Amino acid sequence: MMMMMIIWKCIFVGKDGITKWEKSISKKNLKTRAQNIIKHFPGVKVAAKGLKTEIAIWKYFFTNDILNLIVHYTNKHIQSARSNYSRERDGKDTDILEIQAVIGLLYLAGVLKLNRLSLEELWANNATGVELFRLTMSQSRFRFLLAHLRFDDLETRDERKKIDKLAAVREVFDTVVNNFKTAYTPFEFVTIDEKLEAFRGKCNFRQYIPSKPNKYGIKIIALADSKTFYTSNMEVYVGKQLSGPYECSNLPTAVVQRLCEPIKGTSRNVTVDNWFTSMDLLTSLYEDFKLTLLGTVRKNKRQLPLEFPQPSRRPVGSSLFAFRSNCTLVSHVPKKNKNILVL
Image (cartoon, rainbow, N blue to C red; front, top):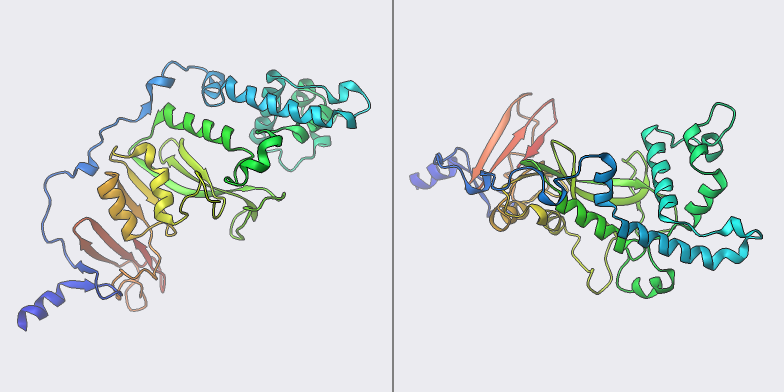
């Protein structure tokens, strides 16, 4: 009985009544774990090693094959709508140079933070507009190309949408993301998080997230280098995919596992927020991917000790620790009645 009481005093028990946490580190591990030894050094991979200029680097990601696809599909859409234009020049085909110019102007608008200006203001000829826009192409041509820009074949889209909600951009999106993976190895710390790309058009997987700056949009989850901010992998959240080759789980653990495929076995540390963090994810990354995890934890997790989600009786600035064989749990009180849990 005395022995049981001593053991009980040395451990925390999770809310599930099963998970046990030690109150102190039982044995100091002097040997560095394999998951903390970097095996693949960060930096540019061989495939992209010789790229020196900005345009050469950009063309590695957006190759001529991709741009030619966009030109082909865009021209196909233009031809189907050409009868709507009285003058032939108003509905003429585009080419790769013009598509590059359109993309360049969109980049320029972003760099100059012009998203709140209308096209009329950008193309204004009264010294208030941006001269480079007028010198590149006319406003009417820019509008025309944006209206007809396509990334897939409209004639086969309905058939492809039966197995893929992302059919409209799948071919181009997957190719570009694959180029991201083959160009660069991230540093030892990476981050997985979501971004909401502003969009208010028709889309059955458009999200509404009131906490975001743009409340409506397309949610993209990305794996990025914490030091250089390079995006190594990403996927679009489309909700429940249709049955077929693109069907996959949207559970947080499954999402992180898919995004971590490019760094599997490279001993990186993955930082996530509390939507992703769980004991299952930590174990999976550690054992199957040879990666470590750092993440904030939601207070409703069943494996947490009862003492950890309750900060009311603890002084400000205090921290409470719990240990298992492969992880450490920290509960920190930065201010009164505020508690941060980190795994």
